[in-house]
Image (cartoon, rainbow over all chains, first blue to last red; front, side):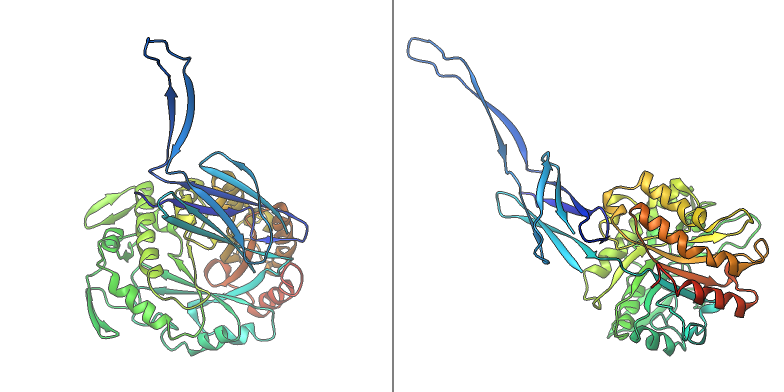
Length: 89
Length: 345
């Protein structure tokens, strides 16, 4: 199983109080795969249900963000590869 | 300073971690200096708000930290002057040829440098340790020697790898008889820098150690090639140099030229890094009134930093070459006056 990778970048290094801070997290894992599973129920007479589809992710990643100053970071977007978090200086 | 830590974990419990540091509140930009020949700048800096210093050493030199006959560097560092140590693969400070030496009980033999750089036509091309030599481990002894000396300094420094990769590569490079174009040389340098970073970061470093790569910043394509995001994730500063060499050059324009390319071409990791101007200067031949030009630098830096990242954090005046202060007393007085006002205070 592969080890995930992650980078973190802020939209600056020095912020004035009250200024919005944006944290861009780029992450990936070679094992992470989206799958679509399609299920059809068939009875003994050969009658089949309509197919239903569901998606699952193999080896999903979980992201945690901590801040040693105690500031809270809230997630404002996450597309599975890039997540953006926001806090206020 | 605050630090935000991001951890990503997969289903099997494998994790990876990244950090980003930030500071709240306006911090002064550090005004800095370099004196020709790597000479003792203590007298020039005394009494002025000089808080940063650039120094140059070759990995070939047996005396990198603090340098040969340079005890003043320790004194300045211990007094809080932030050191930007430019460590170069360019070969100087030692006889040409292989070296054998012992570091902390281990004996290393490093071959002669096999690359030429700065291949400007009509000039003698300087030698340098080749990027191939670096990535094949032949220069590990040089890094071990530098690190062993670094650990005795007593303070952390910024290690800037190379002075100006664009100047080094502008006319191509040649290693072991094989010519490489400018772009090829940039790509090979990024590999070598990654190797050196991996080597140092795998070992215990003094607290406060940071890393950057050196570039003059006169070529946009080269600047972009030298700053891939994966590399910037391992570096702490952006770096470029700023010189006025034409009467039409304003401070704002000269400091902003490379910044504008960075903003246009680099990714969020690169742009999150503060900027260390390792060299800035005014050439007196074209701009006789150096003092007047120097006086325009503080408002230029204020404006650039107000415009957004990357944030210029240190500016080191290069009192040598193009930047030679003439007359010195007048130039130094102007530099002291500049560093006495915002953004330097």
